[in-house]
Length: 298
Image (cartoon, rainbow, N blue to C red):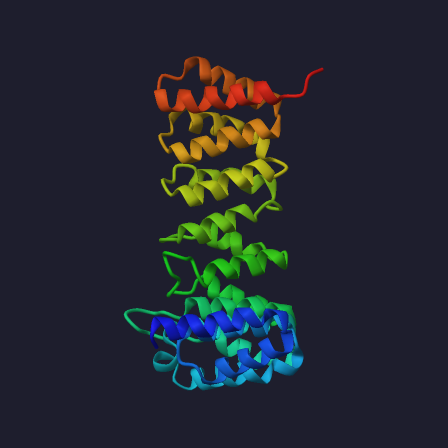
């Protein structure tokens, strides 16, 4: 399709916004027949915004067609994942089989490529069957094909389990041996705020020296939100004193200032007086100065 033809279809689809019924009819026709992925996605977006149950058969039929030969008809599962997300407001228990199918789909291009599709299937399955979704989430938490770039589908598995209050699998992931994906580990740690206090020191010992900034963010978010997190103040101060991970350093200084914990504020001021690293000293003094200028007056 030429760029002008593509633009013409997209423009017409947009211009019909003042006539919702006509726009939906045109979107349905494009979705059924057009081959250009941009046009198909734009048409799907229009249909999704309608949230009209009468339109369900259209994307469901397209999903079934793509799923018959996913590698050829929908490489990477991009369209199928989009269809599942579009159906989320309209999902019904009868969709369970399709959603389970999505959550278990593994397809290879230049490597496994359907992680986002498995994540979409799991996310929407959680809307219709919490128990079943929980089982699939535990499986996908340690999916061997989890993307090191996006963290999917394991990242969605963490969020589903956390939404259900199922933190035992997250603790198991955080404390297991072997390599872990930073995004997945960080999200697991972040959601362990109900962890028994006696287990917190072992989590800190396990991950406190990590060089993975995303994992460290999750650890510090846990410490800042956990009821017993204050017992790790010495670890936090030592991290601030020694780290050269400046993004994490800036985040922690800003977050600690916002918390208005007077003990930690005293520690930050002491660090500012003693810090010799010019970059860290600038971060500290700028943050402390900003707080000083915006703090409420007595």
